[in-house]
Length: 169
Image 1 (cartoon, rainbow, N blue to C red):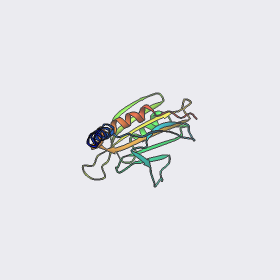
Image 2 (spheres, rainbow, N blue to C red):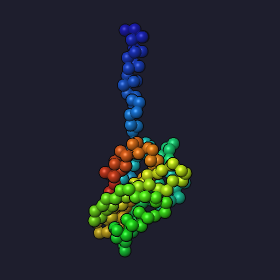
Image 3 (tube, rainbow, N blue to C red):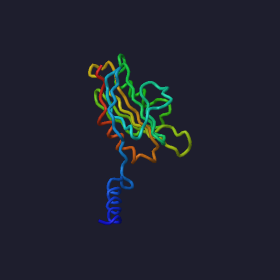
Image 4 (spheres, helix red, strand yellow):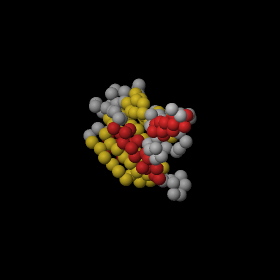
């Protein structure tokens, strides 16, 4: 066997294991469980990292080398019903427009746009809130990302939504 032949085989092996141009990068999904309220989510730690500033309640992740954020939080819901919380979040600071709403008796989703910090820089938000079975607590996640990058983030939001659970206590 010649060295040239072995070199060709080695190059073919390298190319067959490398991701193709435009192929999705592994998000590195890892399960997170909130100790205080008992909800869980799968987090894309291959794309996001814990916010080094960590100054907001709950858990905040920031995109590695980008501007997307992912926030997870929970809280008591005594005296707060689903409609009240949905109204409060849909008219919160910085919300420009809610373009999508869905929900059931114990959960809801809001999506839309934040007011741009600079002209032409639209930011999409996607929020899902779930209440515990006894309605005494809630869990929520919010993902924000540049509107221009929606095709890249849509499957990540879908995965988050499919693997996000309501609080257990």
